[in-house]
Image (cartoon, rainbow, N blue to C red; front, side, top):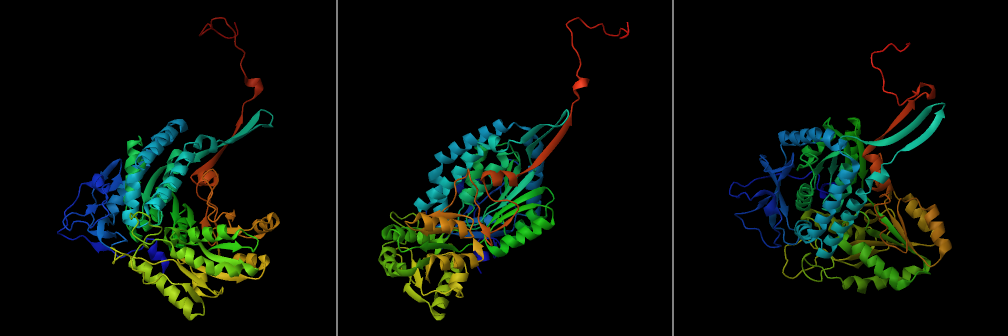
Length: 541
């Protein structure tokens, strides 16, 4: 299923003895978009206690360029000793880092966001080479992460506590937010920069130290982000990076130093991490799968709706948890469905670095096969393939994991293509006789990440936002991802855990509340004079 496609529990590959090791992080930054030399494949380093180190592991995972399926790098499955060293480094760094003033920690983040901006193009190239998305989409990947760094710079305000004076005579009560200790992040493949930046900038700015496990499918951007964090002045041990699959996940869930785990990915892995981490007394936040619906009313502006659906359904090759993958056409609006086809056909499918590419490949041959299988079974279940993206031929890239935009109509709620998160450029279209029917269908769906309504009626929009049970709602806005001063508030089956990502909810996740009740009696206050005290003299004289 899709769980493996999020890059958590992969098949391991052994290092080929003929492969020559490249110099750690600096070679990692040199993306070429071309075939890797068989004699020189870059090796993804670990970051432990402020130093990039080469893993001593004998198990390595090949990283493929999804547009060519050529191996461009390898990532290690960190040894237990390496993971333990990262944990111990984070634990050692915590006392001094958490004792540093919030202003001093924020200044590191101010410098960090500047460095990320200056290295945007290098990050974009790594993302496109390892993940496959277009350069334009990679730019958005970095930018949305930058917004979280900017918000982390304001952590001093968000972590302010509360005070009540004179809860009783001479007694005051006040509270403030305190960092937990060592936190960890487990990342998916689909946003190699944004998701790590959802996690560690906020966690460390409020005083925690951090262990990051990037996706083993595309860790390059995360390693560059870590290098820039060191350049910004982050002390050794505050941020550490390990790599691997299930063994690394289990280590973070079990390690007693780790107090909180952030995860974004698929259902099975997220529920597993939540259960195992929680059993070990850790806080866990897990963003899981999604099935996001667009509800189109017949009074909506047709051209705007059609263009919005094309971008939200097929952008990033559908590999984002806020993709609009299901469209509910209310009443006569269903007559617009055929007009989606010529718009979708205009999209250029190619390697992400090719100028003008609108969508790139999906992450792996396994993912491609899974998507094609769901399309095939939809047809067998009685749906109609209005536009079929299977078997698309992309010039100059015959071996890539390409699938073109696909539109499926006549879809019913019992069909696999509706029930499953496809995670590909596939839009399923359903009919809803009334707005009430559309709301009921969405509320019956187990997922609750996001939804959107397209209408010119304020009353209909108000009814929708009030009655629909989804965490993030767009009104004439196809992908309603909140800015980081708010929080990412997916609900129902799309989220499980203690508190949502970033914003005030994210700050609360990475801190706990310490409440102090103090008594200072007014009558105990001394009376001070200006006469030199006569030390040692009997007070009665």
